[in-house]
Image (cartoon, rainbow, N blue to C red; front, side, top):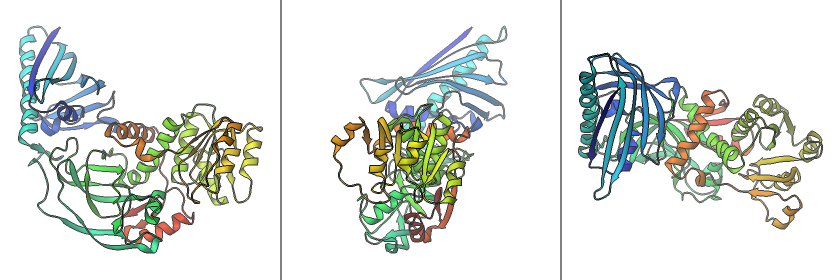
Length: 490
């Protein structure tokens, strides 16, 4: 067995070096031997088990698989699956360690493999010089001199940005109040600064939090300002210090700062997610905030398990559909409330076994009938004032009432001592507290995109409005005339 070990010191902080190397598909951006690369089967480039297929400058193709990745150890291990070079049973590990007396990083690359008899020295030298040492030099040059390549492989300086502001159209909230205060007008997207990118939007998600921001209930921004916290678009310009995102990438986000109701914008890159090729821009804009919400509600706020009984209010809505689909896939029995007979079919098609039209039936009584008087293990309530007390009534002993919205209005003050009658738990989760770091966003979107690929989730875009018609979209949302997700198209 041949063993090759090479190391170097990169004059850059370990977090910066690791942000490049942990992306298993980034090598075509900086390694001189790699011409182009892609991840097979739509997996994320930091997902253990993903396979990268790439071509070298001479046209040769290889396939390598990520076997292990540890952010805490700053290390990953991979193997070669297919290669034109006879490197049999090739396994390699990349490890980074901080240099304690300097703002630098020790980088070790270690591998073992078999070769045909007599080729041991030749192939060991090829791996050491053409792969490892060439990588050391290229990445060091990138991190210290500020050069990169765009997705098409062409060289470009960093920052890859224009010299001036870009003026585009957007919907601006003129004052807190009704939808009539949303007005179309020009907005400016400045050149990206350090850690920022400029994006040209392709689709924008509409969410109830936009209504809260418009009315001033959530003071996330002060008028005049564009609204919106969710969108998908194409990166047009990249600022200094941005790793893992290039011009031409399609990215999505569901985060502050508010300001998505525009044709283009400049924003921090840290919480952006590169969208897999198999997910359309409209799908990404429709699922990021709602799908991420469903993920942390089902897997973090209250971990739903096989056999649980779940009550989902607004089961035909955007988040409601994802909650029903995902809970059903986990093995839960799903009860849902909807506003009309038309929405009964929608809820049922999305995994709700027992849709209840709340205008026609008392949902607390129906829950008691369905569960033989036991009640449900968890209620996911985005309605608020009109349902909160009744949601508690529908709980089983030691049940969990998760109040994550208030479409019908603010909830009246409650006497927490009354919840002792059922030893009930009440939660009021905040989206931002589950998505405030890149690591949190990555963990949630990894599971979300995997659920999409596996067919656990599907995206129902019930309405499309032009971006300039955002006021009409707000009216439809507030009057509960929508189903599924709504997107605004610039």
